[in-house]
Image (cartoon, rainbow, N blue to C red; front, side, top):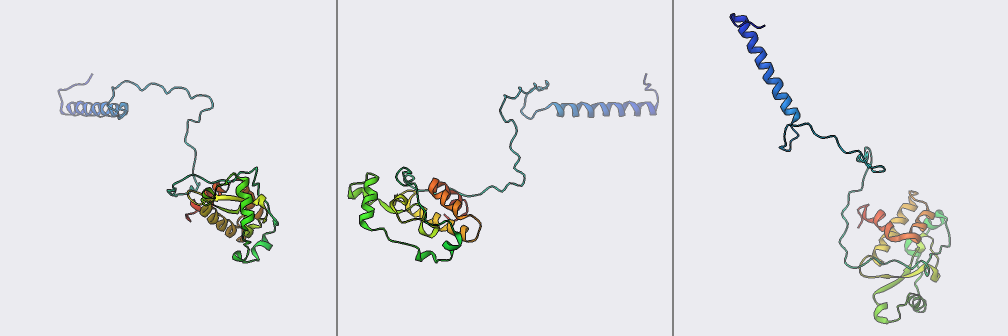
Length: 206
């Protein structure tokens, strides 16, 4: 029993009363979920769905590219791989990089361009003027000069000019020994558009 007839007893009672108030306030704050709800205990979270990742991925030490996708009107121009699988004359990076880039360019004759256009079904001159027949794997990356390595790239949208930028970026990486020549050739033969996104856009060269 706490006696209140003495000064010391009154101080003890006041101290206990203050302590009780502090504990009550702490309990109220701990039970508050910040959403203005009641003071009842929060329900247990639902069990995770099997196979569902319930935690964010750990990105510690991962450098993610920070880039803005350029606004380009029009579609994405891609070759028909059944018609243009790509072809190369060498996989020797030393031989490719020893020759100046601008000297490695054989113009495509009008007759050969017509063959390529016909293979893609672009028979109308109006259609043909929307494209440029170019090499899927450029000569500066060991590409061959036969029709298996040629395709009509669209002038508008994502096409001819973006592929030229991709070729230049890949050659720089190959000649700096940061990417193998065979990998660069395979990337272009498989999906040059993905190469443009990775090596031009994400690298800040677009």
